[in-house]
Amino acid sequence: MSTANTISATVEFSFRGEHHTITALLDVAHLTDLLMNNDERAVHRVIAGKNGLDTYSYAYEVMEMQPVVYTGASGLIAQFITDGELDVAGYIEVWQAKSACALQDTAGNTDSDMDKVLSEIAAEHLRIEVLAEFPEVQAALRAAYQAGRDSHAR
Image (cartoon, rainbow, N blue to C red; front, side):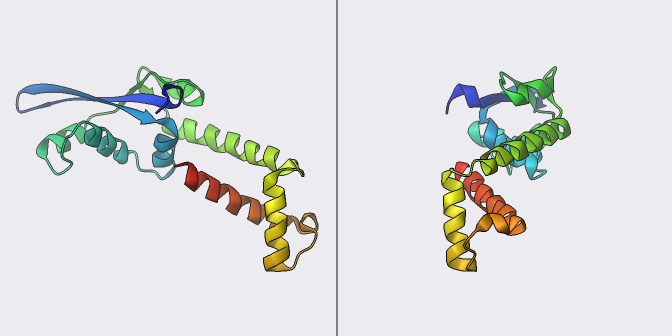
């Protein structure tokens, strides 16, 4: 896992009179997927799993009640961390906007591999010879293509 695309996530908690600090290095893309699915609690499960903490234990239940502290980030996500706290809503909003812009940039490149693939799919399955004449279909195919690429990147 490249450190350029990672973030450190730490949870501190006390259990049975002992103080615990557990940290996990998370892939930012994976973290983004969890946050996009409104599954912030999954971050606790990932941290626990990477530290051998059973998610069916009382210690995990105590750990899960504590906030995750984020450090060591770079790139876009770093702009949304203040004193270890991640502004999830702000990050997701900007991430989605940047992703949409990137998709539009890719869509504007008529020589791209994606446009060739989409044109072939439209011709074969929809009997559309000039995909650009059907902007709604083209947009739907691009969205499906991007969703497939995103799911393989996980």
